[in-house]
Length: 215
Picture 1 (spheres, rainbow, N blue to C red):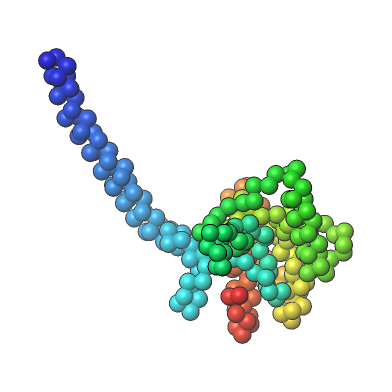
Picture 2 (cartoon, rainbow, N blue to C red):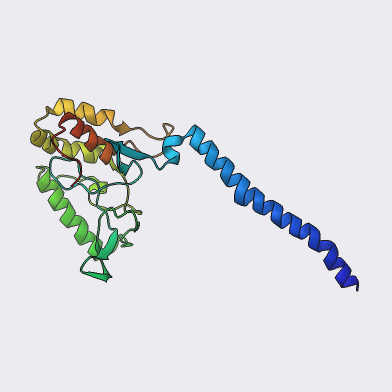
């Protein structure tokens, strides 16, 4: 009887507490933070989406795969996607936002060493560099997410001559455009200066509307 009495005495406060915290943490708090984000940071709260002519063409948070030589190229991406010929298999789909991930190859992996060497060779050839020229690490390695929208300033500057030549833009003007789209360290302390590839390529297309950004 005593056990039943104690149980009945605890049941009501336990249920009340459960409902209270469910409403507080499951409804009130998410609603408050969502409203605050929409009011204070509407662009970020909506996914940092980039629109052109009323159409969403990307996000500042997710990179895109640029391969045409007149564009600045993103860093490698190891994301995968379903094979159109056989959905049970996966194939390489760079910057597949629905399949974020890395190669998981460690620094002692021979496969990674070979990949980096092959990427460095192509990078030097594409940008007219000497066969032994140093190459920025982000130009030959993928990010942990596979979706990094940024490249280093060093990477962007090594691509500048190629883009300037193909776009027929004076290198000085293109360098200024690059500087205008360089993001400094967060709070002046964290991370490194970086360049958002999609935003920079869109700025290039703004100079030459006849060249489409989509590939």
